[in-house]
Length: 255
Image: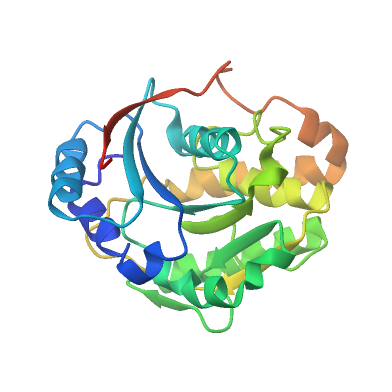
């Protein structure tokens, strides 16, 4: 989470008893928020007794969205989990959308089980037609470049097989919002088994960090560089600043 004190409580409210039945542990990764996010998380966890262990982490530096993924991935690897589910703290996605697939264990056949806003069965609330059209265009371009159907380049609800993450192939990917795009491209090169599933996505009181024009250009350049030389792309250093270790401190736990 990053500066989403109004939304994070709603996200935690999604973690119902039914959802907990499919989870072993929950971690909230605070990427050095400057608001009262930590306080409201601690208050929520002290007032609501979840049936699974739940811990609040604080990154040792502002690592960005991608860097926070790397913190969570490493924790999952170090503690021997089978799968890791990533849910953004801004309450745009809903973990209940993945629940039917958890019940049927549909994810077991795949390395990457990714929420998609732009496929049959998905619903968008408060999302402009212009942005929707742009995403369809880029999904098509990435489908061509990757060689497998791409229905989203980075929603706020994704699931990964932890064994996939042990070699840290993702470590040199961007630490910002571009991280998920790199993951989609990397899946093509490494031949990961990928499946998308439809989700409900909403925008109401969230603050977007995306600068559409500049990001569109950056993403297009990213795709072109991948298509020109896939091996060079996955082996390249994409980060603006190299971080040796993505570390965080546990500042609260409900156990």
